[in-house]
View (cartoon, rainbow, N blue to C red):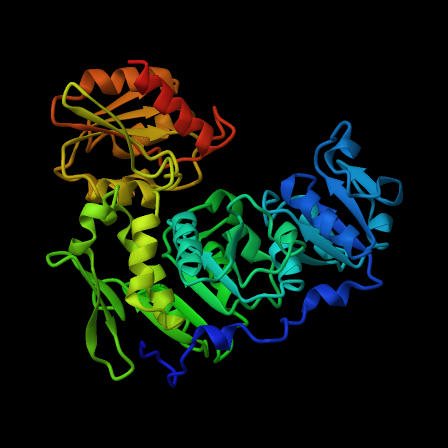
Length: 477
């Protein structure tokens, strides 16, 4: 339906679902090789289960000693597995051919660098799993909106009558998913951590939701973060499709030599949304814009504000166009979609004040996005563990919108230094104190926006636990 920057080739369902299963790629290359798994968390254990299933020899290394580790998996034949904690000698490393690293291991960690120096190739769990995938892969990456986009994509394919499994960084390891019955599609959320260590990973479809500074504490600098994200396209061919926002010049330039068909979304892109008419339009192969979905006719059937997920919606609509799916499939997806928790989620209205939980906003760009969706004065709650980002980048999105900021957690002093000169900023040690302070600052007609712009690990184990705590505190007011 849409024109790409390469000669048009329709990607109808029958073409991406061949009669014969897709033959495993690099996974089959591991026969007879000795593998070392770096990290004994969820990803590492799932990797071990897959290697055990295929009778591939492996060992474990973890920076921390883990007690009773044999109870972590009943599938692994532990007596046959070497396990190393805290240190591993160069002589021992020479017994291995390959390292599969977990996403929680920083790219520049001393042990990982030592493994590379010893001549071991390092790949990620995503790279390993892709070699055993017997169905087309829709890989979704980007700074924000990955999980919502994956959820919508899975629902879209379901409405088209296809079985799609959502896996990857979303919490269900890709290495586990490829051991189950083969679906029609794998929808794989891939993080920059996972993409940093790929070699042959080549999804049939890549959806890039956008790019903004994030995870600089892990990557070291912005260039490494960006290049890791763009690894999702490094092996794509002319029969593949990459979808990305039209306004992201850096992505466009990085794709200048990518042979995959390119579909853009956003204002002026191949798929766009007219805010006044609430109409999604799509560009045909002849370059003509045509009406695709009229959202105003669906508004009464939606239990949410589609504008809060408009970017994800456009990305998935572009995927629908790449698959030549009719507008009715997109409409069916929209009316069945349930917004995910902790993403611009209205928790409560009290005394004319709306409390919004956006705990998933773990970057400055995500907080700026949430601010852009607000039409009322905002008391903004920021804080947590700093990821090496600049909070002053929030100032443009805050102009004329933010009444006050409540900064909490480990990053509170840094937040105050970087934006306190422009925005009235109050400090709080923990979340309970921050909510209490925000309540006293908010006036009738305001929004208390909990959009931390930081990681949660200073006081919580993840953003979900942090968001649940916010909802509980608010509902107890």
